[in-house]
Image 1 (cartoon, rainbow, N blue to C red):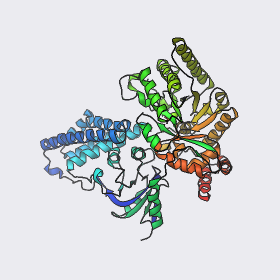
Image 2: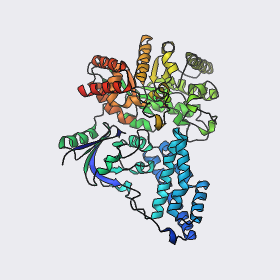
Image 3: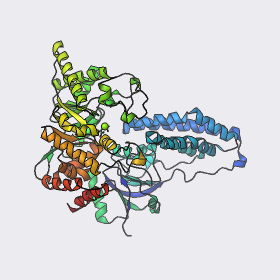
Length: 566
Ligand code: PEP
Ligand code: MG
């Protein structure tokens, strides 16, 4: 057999090798004969199916909360809501009254809502996928077809599918399954996000060629290159297996020519600290504190936050823990804060804008907890502010820090001023970087937001996904300009957006002059290995080549061909 390579989009920087199991939930769906339909019986079948689907969803929610995380499990709450939606129920009822069997009635009742969500664009359009997920579940239950149980796949299975839903992906056991590949999907699809959380090799968006891969074939899922290799040669197979045992480097690493680069983890919940340590992170480069505020009725008080920050410092007594103050608004609503409905929330009151406005009390409480933790914790605390656009905002935030310090002083409470920094996520911050750097100890570039704002392409909108490319010369130049301003003004500079976790870009980022890279824990080992392979001086020269590219395609070509030459 000859080796064949299909190309898609890599979702997780992991490779796996295994045997193809095709997963087609719809394959054995019967096509009931409409002439024989008894509406009363169909109504009962639908009610029973809905009950079964509800129990399944509740069980899957619980399993996902345990295995992946509470935040990821919330997707099933949305599914449960759709399942109980009275409009959909009415739609099914009407269709059954029109003489359709329950399976077809479900298909018809979901068609309009799916189309409506798709038409809305942005994040709302993603809800269409959730609706499809619920629809397919109901149809499967109605058809009585036992799909392959994704939770019970044989050891070493590679799942191939048209698409996988969040529920499907959460069922895959990363200890047994070698990976998956899908015809459709994107890097930010739920399936891809879950795959990353589970460190499961995955390639999405392979296209129709995937259908030519036979059940039982041996394949390598190369989630790093975004390739599915069918009937791989022995070397390829071995290489894929080898990457499973990626070496954990517990100590800070340097480039081949001795430049120290801090490689830290992004965390959102205390429970993630263990994983970050296990993957050898030097510290925490981004603690997204909004997760401490989610899934509850009221915000955590000062003491609860103080304990959470101390816990992070204790996890990394020799490292640095960068805590970001509350970053809500945009795509991160918190129900009890009653955020206003905004026409364009990504350009509205989010991040520091809320902390200096309606959430000033929360900001002060958080700063009190942080300043106390800075005094009492073992490791080194750093605090940064999200979505800063102007030097004045930063001045105001820093004045609040001083006022809190004075208040704690007066009260006789121990406190210390941590390192203070600012996230660079807006063009405004890039262009005023010298003035910002004058006021702080460090910067951290949030490329997720910076890319969306530089390229005017909303973060979750798949229609403009191509524009949202962090390797675009416009974004690279924004990064380079910020690094220069930071260093000229004596500040260190890190990056905590998704871009930092791509080991293929480590050479470029070191070449651009970043001092620290922070990422989801799963990619820490690969990025540490990539750092050790970099020659910083050569990398700087290669980075200037990419910066001078006239087009995005040219920049990508330069970055990729340089990577291939190394
Ligand atoms: C970013 O914008 O790159 C970032 C790290 O912040 P978040 O993803 O939490 O908006
Ligand atoms: Mg951001």
